[in-house]
Image (cartoon, rainbow, N blue to C red; front, side):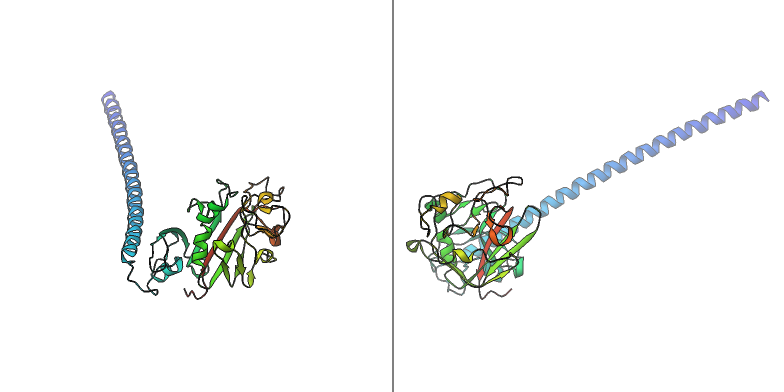
Length: 298
């Protein structure tokens, strides 16, 4: 009987040791599986990064090829005028592009942001307000040449806008408030005169969702800045509204006004305003102004 008990005890110890070894083996297997999963995720991340870099390089190569193909011997039908021209050449990803210098048109190289998605795409952005990191209370020369970061807040420059609107052009103004609601205003015609005529604004018919047309009041007015008062008022509107704009006497909109963050966005008359949507004291969260030719077909 003692011998049988000893055998049973010995067998129990062996089974316990075996169970422990098996448990240890399973733990090792699980650790190895987790390590393999981690390595797989790291590999997927690296592959994703590599694909992103390849896509970016591929786009840059396409643009370089486009620039190389842009020669002084080209005809006007071959020329790359703006984002709509790029769209027609099958560049259909929104982002930053460089329009090549064009001696045929007399235009220098120009970095632009293209919206290739909204309402069929082909839009060239001429203004954006979204971060509030830079002031738009600039002088005449800065508004003439352009300023800001093309990926962030910027003004493309009155000379560039004048050149881009030499053929029939439409304008789209997209706005977002601090509650996340969006609206837009679109004009059948948009152009500005040259610098000798103070970049005077000319607008066509309005349609959209932004309430009352709040750019109409500024139609046929010259551009004003803090150092060049061209408005139709005794007051210096550019100084009062702290921006460069087509001020009348003074505003029904002020898309180049002061960027006020939430909490301060309903207290000032010099904010980024569109009276027909939110009134004179509501400063908008985001604005984009974009143009494309009238005859554009997606």
